[in-house]
Every structure is written in C-alpha cells, then in structure tokens.
Length: 189
Image (cartoon, rainbow, N blue to C red; front, side):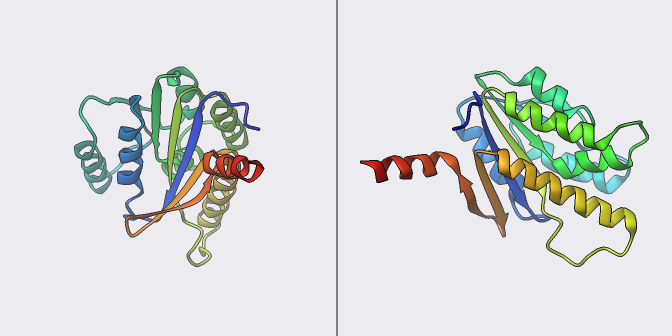
C-alpha cells in the first residue's frame, strides 16, 4: 500500500506527441493550485521558440518556477497538499545534470528526486520524452543519455501512481494504481 500523501503521475511521449498538452490538461483538471516547474535552459534561438510556445499554451495565472538542476529541492519546497506541481520535462533536466557546466553527481540527483517524489504532498505530474524506442545511438554520450533516461523512467514508473504514454495526441494509460485498487476491492465484494 502506498504511504505517500500525494499522487505522482508520470507522462511519457515522443517529440511533439502531445504529452505536454495532456499534462497541462491533467493539471487544470486537478482543481489544485498549479505550479509549473520548467527545467529548460535556453542556449539557442530554436530552444527559445520552444519555450515561448510552451509559455503561450499554459494559463498566465500558473506560478512558474524555473529550475534546471535542483529539481528535488524545488519539489520539496513547492509541494503542498493543495498544489499540483507540473514538471516539464525530465529529459531536459537529465541533460542539464549530465552535460551542464557544474559539479553534479547524477546518481545523487536521481536518488534525491525519487525521495522528493516519495515525500511529495498534493499532486506531482512529471513529463518526459521517451527516447529509447529508436535506434541505438552511435556516440558514447548519446548512448549514456538514452540509458540514463531509460533507467530514470523505469524508477519513476515503478514509484508513480499513474503512468501514461502519449502518442499522436492519444493518451494510453499504462498504470493506474487508483483503478487497480478499485478493481481489487470490487473482486473482494
């Protein structure tokens, strides 16, 4: 039985799959105060355009927290019983952690994130890019990124209450602990 006070939802999808729009819709439907944790760092014009696109899509009244590295700390600080934290996205955070200009131990950052999710209150919605369904990358750094993303996704999916894969704008529920519990209770009746 899950002892966590809050609920963690994990939303995966490929590039332009509709995962962020779906996550934003889920956040709106939560009825909670939404706090948007943005992990992107802008290094070029194309990324700046992506950020602007996301900013235009979400409601102006949502609090935006820009946190490219200290994600666990942001979740701990901003998680409250009446809030919905929307983290977009984990693969950008992973990129910042693995390849940024800082001294960060990835295994520690990952462990801290998982611990923060376990202690979270309210609702946390995590968005990430599924990058492991293509060909194996040729470069060592690219392979490490794909491997680390896959292991991170597995750890979060195991811990999450709900996991959804979005493809072509269509959400496919992979795991829903609340419905699994309801089904088990109905079997006992």
